[in-house]
Length: 376
Image 1 (cartoon, one colour):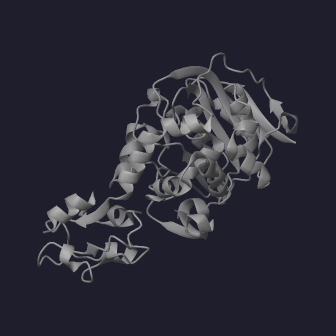
Image 2 (cartoon, one colour; image 1 turned 60 degrees about the vertical axis):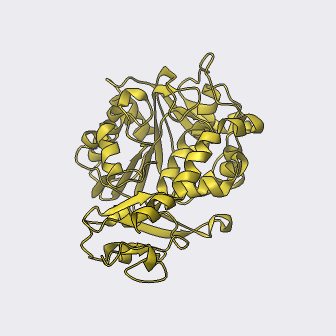
Image 3 (cartoon, one colour; image 1 turned 90 degrees about the vertical axis):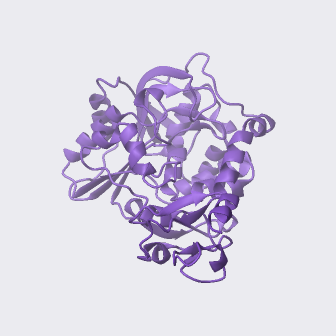
C-alpha cells in the first residue's frame, strides 16, 4: 500500500506540513549527500506559480539541515539553455536565497546512462543527482499541455541536461510516445521523497498558464505514481486516462489505483478545475506552438565570438560528441584566420555544453543561416 500526504498549508506557514512529510516518509539523511530539486521551468516570479515557491524550498532545506547531512545541493536543469540561464532563473524565482546557501548549477557535470534505443540508447543526467545519496523532488501542482498535469514524474524531466529535453520532445513525435518516455526518465533516479508545492496551483494550458487556483496544500509521498494519481483526482481527471501513469505502473514504479493508495489527509476534488484536453486530436491541435519552438531551438548551433574567445580549448575538451575543433571539415565556416573553434553541425547534438563551460562566455547560439552569415 502506497501513502500520500495531503496537508493544509500556506506560504507563510508551510514548515509544519514539510516536517510532517519527513515524519511520514522517513529518509536517512545524517552524514549523507542530499540533492534537492525544485521545479524551475524558467525565470518567473514566485506569484506566477510556474516554479516551486521559495517558501516551500526554504522549509525543505531547513528540515534537511536539521538532520545533519554531509552536504546539500539545490539545483535543477531548466528549460532555458543560454549561458547563465540557470543562475538567472533561480535568482528571478527567488530560489537562490531560498536555497540558504546550497544552490549549485547542476548542469555543468554529466553522467552518461543507458536509455531507450528509440532515444539514442544513452542519456546524460546531472552528476550531482546521479551521485546523491538522497534525492528530494519538489514538483509544482500545475497542468501541462502534453501530459495533462506536471507533477512528480514530470519533474524528473529536469534530470536531463542541455537540449536533450527538446530532443526527446522531437523524437517522441506525439503525445503517446512522450507519455511512455517520461517514466523511463523518472526511473533513472527515483526520488527518495517527493514534496509538492500545491499552495498556489495552476490550471488551464500549463505549464506556464496565467490561470491560477489557490489550493492551500502541501502534498508528499515516497512514490511518484501514487502522488500524481492523487493530483489527477484533485484536478478531476481519472488517472487511468494518463498514459505516463499507465506506463509507470507497467514498469513497476507504483500504482495509480485508488484502492492501492492510503491517504494522510483528505482528498477533495477542486470544483471546475480547468485541465488541458485529454483527447489525442485535441492535444495535437494545441501543441503546434510548442513543436515549432522545439524544432527551431534544435537547429541552433554554437558559434564562437573571436573577440572573446581565448583559444583555451575547454569547449573542445567538453564536447561529448567531439563536434568542436580548431580545424577540420567545417573550417570554412570559421571566422577567417581567427583560430576559433568551429562546430560540425551534423555531429552536434545541441547539448550546448560548450556554451555552459566556456570561461570567456564566447559561445553564442545562432540559427544556421545566422551562423553562416556571421562566419563568412
